[in-house]
Image (cartoon, rainbow, N blue to C red):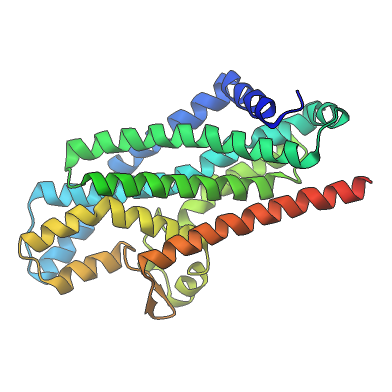
Length: 300
């Protein structure tokens, strides 16, 4: 078992063989969707209605539900693509604990091949779970208010794919030095509890203080959340325009839900958000490669 393909199959099979790990990863987005729609949904809907009343605009219940649904779905996917990656990447830690990694390195196997196999296997497992979660989210939007086009869905899938790449690279860097179950549990708990806040999924960044907004504007997860927001809610904003909503009201709503992001006062275009996210993936992968190279040099 020295080839990259064989290692990827081995890692993927071990992940799916652990029914507890797999079903936990799979059911977490569904549970989040239920919790979001039950608790956050009412909060978001009240906020939208208050904002529309203040602007003297009226919207149908379906349009408001579609708007809230798009925000909830983008929040869920923004969190799941990263947290599921951390769960999927625990195999790298488990191999250290069980000694399997030592056995693999005894074989005529390049450390770079082993590192790449962990990354690709984690990416495939995470992508499967997140695409399943995306399908569930689309069904949810179809029930509460569907305003998406085929292009919106395609761009949403692209966002999920890029964010999975980022989540896998980030989890690879963070999990690489871990060597015990306690460390892995602590990291997983911290990421699950904190990532949703710093990426703007649980609470729009526009509601944070100016200083905190500037700090968060340096984090790539912020722009990934905004990309998901824009593509999940574009149809809703277009329908608002068709129904005669003043452009300034639509822009104010976009600002309030982080569809519009500002870096020190300058609005960030969607193309730049893609560049930031793609660049972050490349940077995180480079750090992961460097960590493996340094470990190999120390072992020699």
